[in-house]
Length: 180
Image (cartoon, rainbow, N blue to C red; front, side):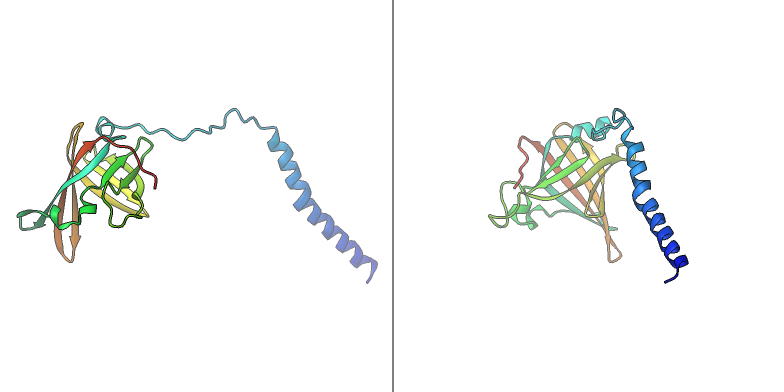
């Protein structure tokens, strides 16, 4: 090895040391002088409309489910077509923009989890729609009626060139959120 090659290797090592050790150290020193007073650790708060406030932190027990097939306008109550464990599901919309679907008192199997679905929610379109988002999927419900104790939603679905509307009736009940 010639002396010239040794110098090149040393200068390469110096360049590596400079780029990978000295520069990060300088950045750490500079950043450590920053004030942490301006950094917020609070979660964002949501400003809810008066319509959304009627929904928040209540337990909405799912009641009747009506089906309308378009263009036919015949309305059928299909509630009893669902098994008993699906007829007492509870929707809980939290103030932080998240929701839970609670299995309710009856379950398919005794060991089924009480919370079977969760995601985010928001009221949109000038308080006329409720969006529920979970696992990358968004369901858009038209809000037909909302009071302190009643919620009526409509879900429009098109499947195999046929259109359906599911009208879901909910009543507010007292209850606690489950975790199992």
